[in-house]
Length: 250
Image (spheres, rainbow, N blue to C red):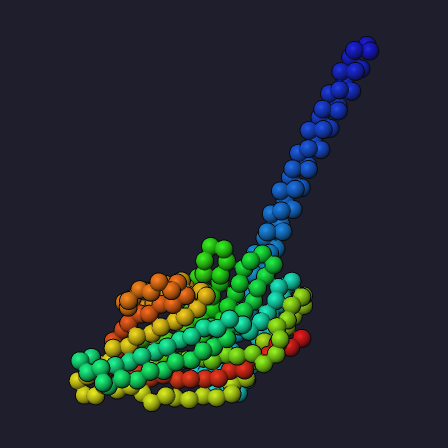
């Protein structure tokens, strides 16, 4: 009877230990999975907010709206207007390089950084996401690249205050400060314009894929990995320049 009692106790202890261990493993893996899912949802929400931001700024540089405000939930991340992206557009008449024009702007992207190395960026109409695996373009800029007529809006965002971090909601306020239609480049009757677009950016890989998706050809691949140039031809080129002031408000 004593041996049998000890066997029952030992069996109970083993079963209890097995159940406890199983519950612990499930809890640990479930907690990690839940935390990962929550973080992924936070980043997705910021992506959606930046898509709305892109629409808001588009209202300014295409629609002529004076200003717009877009709400973003920080969720432990930070917002800033930093880095520098340069977009340069050079056009010349095919067969006559003396007929040419150059348009360029330096802009400060709107940047959201989370706590796990992910970055969401608005730059010149495009929305990008960057991380340890590189950068992807979530939304293309509103450029029209056609053989008969091409339009390249240059959106010069710049900050006037400091960045902001923490939790809660923040308004990204964008004010249109200037808008200029540059002199259109027209190579003349029967002429064709050869256009080179150069982008200098910390996330240049995403721009490279955008140009290639548009069917553009690379020009003199550079050893500078922050710089790419792609070429297309068109009958007529229009370039606009819009200055957009950015502020963050709680």
